[in-house]
Amino acid sequence: MLARAYATLVSGCEFVSQHPIRNDVSCPWARRVQNRLVANHIRELDRFLCVLLEEAAVLLAEADHDASRFARLKRTSDKLDRVENMTGSPSQSTARLVAIRRISIRLRRPEESSSPAYAHDISLVCGASLPMSLALPSIAGFYRSLADRLALEILTNEGMPRFPRVSPPAKRRPQPQIEARSGSSPEI
Image (cartoon, rainbow, N blue to C red; front, side, top):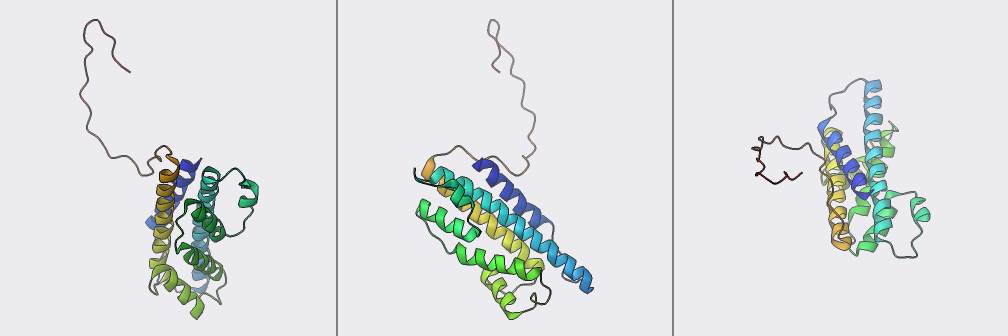
């Protein structure tokens, strides 16, 4: 299940990165629809991360871990804190997740999407004040790097099997056919 959660999050990040939004939308109604779309993208990435964190917690947990209590935590940042404590490698990602949550909420409220606090949150998440057309791929990249880091830490701690490929395989040249020797059966 952890491998599927990882693959889902990575696929979601790739989708968001490959479908850029336009910055030149002048119609207020269209801008509002676009903001809701961006907020939905962010919310889905957050949900995918949440599932990954829940699966990671099950694998990393001690015997007294209460999975249902962990799943009831409302904020992804709280779940990330718990998982990072389990792996023993806390990061500064929690503050960025909280800021991303606020960005998503503000995008749903048109009067707040131009506030100074919104611009501050974008700066906190992306490292600079960017238009949403550039901030969204940066947010997707943050989720991707977080997923990669968590997967690496879990692999290191648990010795788990490899994660599946999430990008399409490269085209390979056909391999020459190996002929079976007389008296032996070909290996399958």
